[in-house]
Image 1 (cartoon, rainbow, N blue to C red):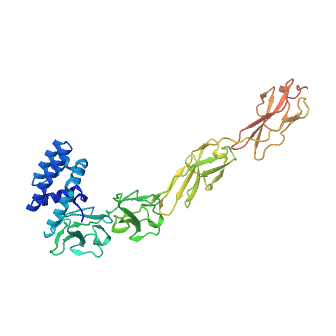
Image 2: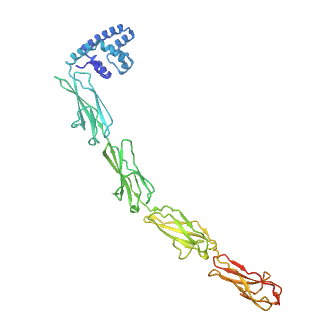
Length: 448
């Protein structure tokens, strides 16, 4: 037979409270008081003796009394138990065998949520009785649930769970007690809010209410139909989503069980924004040189080009490269780039401008003069070989000064030239290039 000392403080308190209501048990307590007093005197602890007497003579032992009395400290309990419990246990056992069982004191701990374990805490002051358990779902027995623990499953969602404890003893009717029902509620899958610009190519983010014990699964929808592979909290719309209604379904799970599903309000996807590429012009901005547009055009984007001179489109200049013309010299040149992509807004950009400088003529030959240096004789200027497409103009000089009207390749000497030196100057011009001027060496002094 289990002894009184084997019970915890709470169980001993229940037994003492119940016991004082019956005369045989009261007599037993008086005997116990005498034994405890004797033991206290033997240990020379008069204060403890008085506390024991006060506690046992009290008809109802409260939690505060237990907390404030040395009777419940381990040091003194052991002395008390060793002194009189063997006698007390036997007397209590004989007395309890004659009493009908009473309903146990019952409490239930645990959270009423999916996957949690509920525990029935049943205490009977009558240690000659047997306790049995049966868990109930909406008042009906739950199969295979007859221990003091029960783990909530998906079947319990939205149901009232309770436990019935039966106190039984041979030869008597059983005593029953049922706990207060606990409603097992679903974690709510609140409709996710969708954050983002709602444009093609810009990421959308679903933001549902989450907690540490709740997991969320996602499924993005296009016009109400699942988008293959779109099962994370973010989704980037493509051209297929343009002007379509995009929403996200969130399914809340707890401990591996699907609980509730909710769908967010839809977002109609608008045209996206093409990422702005880096643009530039490479090459020497000089007449007749080739300029090249540099651009990291986004993948899948169509680009068209237009070279521009001082804000005016240059005819027939729509490639990524451009050979500078004479009309560009001294002007600012730029490129207008137009980007287009399905389901995106067109993007028009301009490069920084470059100022075009003139070209340089490659040939600068030596000019000479041939002919007799006597008055009335004719001199001839020899121009040499120049670049193609150049325009040559001439000027004869007398002692380095231009001779009026003398702009041909030949010159007839006059008396004005007597004792003077004559030279020949050639000027080469070409559109878009710098001008080149070359003068021959002067002749000997002119004589008669």
